Structure formats: structure tokens, C-alpha cells
Amino acid sequence: MDDADALRSPRITHISWGRMDIERLGRGKDFKLYPGGGRPWDWNETGTRHVPGIQPDDVLELLDRGSQVIVLTRGMQLVLRTCPETLALLRERGIPVHVEETRAAVALYNRLAADTPVGGLFHSTC
Image (cartoon, rainbow, N blue to C red; front, top):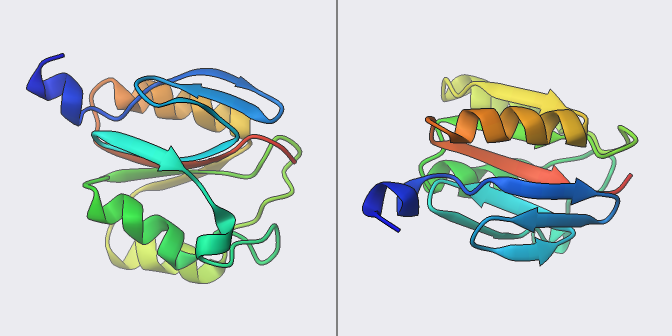
């Protein structure tokens, strides 16, 4: 792997209910992905719940890791929400954000990852 590959956002190679496979990272349920890597997404770290949804602190880590575009998932059944404060933070920083159903978000993220420093939060169930 060359330096450019090491800094590229990892691709999602499989998504199904409760399971994701991530290039260079392996298998898990929910992930935070960003240029150069990622890790499992533990909602307890920031108090994320389906409602009110994705917290500002969840996306700050993605921005700190160099993400210039953000993809947020709603879950497979569109249950997960995004806090208005999270969207306001991204708007204030001029960061493009996409909020999609998980499968659609994965497809968009993988397209962007080919040539854009993209970050994302991926929820593989409800």
C-alpha cells in the first residue's frame, strides 16, 4: 500500500443487516470512517440514540481526521435521526453533508471515497 492508499477513506465492501465489512478494518456492526481509517462506532461514547440522533461530537472526530465531505446514515429502516445541532455545525464549517438510508449512504460514500477525503457514520440495523 502506498501513501495515497493509506490516506484514502476505506471502502465498505459488504453491508447487510447488522454486518459491515470495511477495507483494511474488518467486520463489525456500526462504523466511523474517515480518511486513512476508521473504527467501530460506539454510540455510548457521545450519548447517541435513535432519537434525537447523531450528536455533534460524533462528526467532530470525522472532521478532526480530515473529512471534507460527510455521509450520515439513517439506518436500514430510517429510524436513526440526526440532531439539528449536528447539521448546524457542519453548515457553519462549510462541510457538505449527505443524510441517507444506510444502503444508499454506502453507495454514495464508496463513490466519494475514490477521490474525496470523505467521512461517514454507518448504522447497519434499524
